[in-house]
Image 1 (cartoon, rainbow, N blue to C red):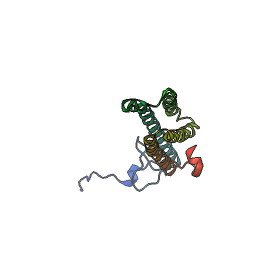
Image 2 (image 1 turned 45 degrees about the vertical axis):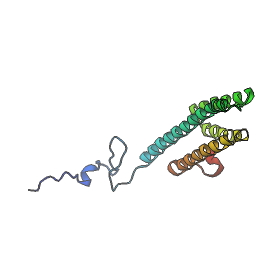
Image 3 (image 1 turned 90 degrees about the vertical axis):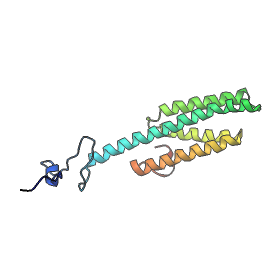
Image 4 (image 1 turned 120 degrees about the vertical axis):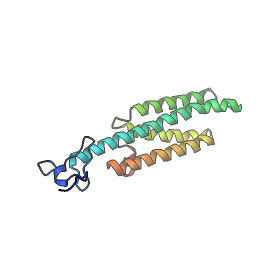
Length: 160
């Protein structure tokens, strides 16, 4: 008699039909190919995860946008009432876009706000630097989403 080794026989891990069995997490045993349903489920989860990261980027941008007028108030230069209200409006639009990212057009709206945020660099060079960093993160997450989920490339990457 042989002692149990703790390993499972590959035939036991498989169901009675020819499709590979998976556990509750959707993982497939090593050596078996995932089914189309499992691939689609992984793509849905990856899509939700990347949209969550994009929402976090927008929320952080909104926070930074709201902190700029306060920081300039201490420097003595200030932005003025009109520019301050425009920055507050941009921050509110970013928070709104973060909540709307699950909509099909949400990523396009967020991408448009990236351009607007970059344009605030006309007022302050520091805003241009900060906006460029956030825009780089935004584009990198979209490229990662393209690789994982398989969204369209090119310009359509910004709106998919």
